[in-house]
Amino acid sequence: MFDETKKYKRNDHFFLRPTDDLQVSCNAPKNSNGVFIVYELVRGQIILVFIGSSGKIQTNGFPPKNDSLYNEIVNSPQFGDLPRKMSWIKKLKDDKADGLDIYWYETFNEKTKDIPSFVEALLLQRHFDIYGRLPDWNKEL
Image (cartoon, rainbow, N blue to C red):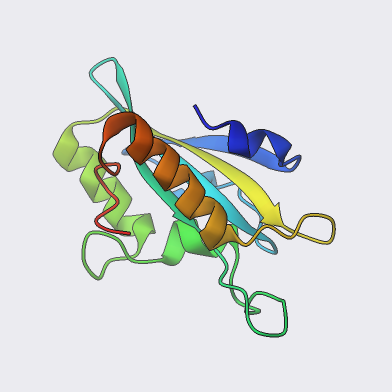
C-alpha cells in the first residue's frame, strides 16, 4: 500500500500481544527517527489503525536528543494521558484483539534526511486517498 516506505533500508516490525510488554517487544531503534504503521489483528482481520512518527527536526537540522522511534512508540501518550506501553495493552484487551503488528522505518539519518512528520503526512494522505478517512486511531491531522 505504501510504496513511499520502500526506499528506507533500515526497517523492521514486531508483534505485541495483550500479554506482552511493549518496552520488551519493541525493536525500534533508540537512537534514530522515522515513521511507524500499526496494524491491529482482530478476529482474523488485519486493520491498519495508526500511522505515527518520531522526531521533529529542530532549526539546527537535528532531532531533539531524547527523541527516537523507540521512545515515541513506547512512551508517548495515546488514548488519554497514558503512555502507549500501557494504553495499547488496554486497547488490545478492550477490543478483544489478538495483537498489533508494528512496522517502523528509519527516515532520518546520515544518508536519508526525510523529515519524519513529513513522511507521516504522506502516508496519511495516501491512506486518505484510498479510504476517504484517517486510520481509526489517528484523531486528526
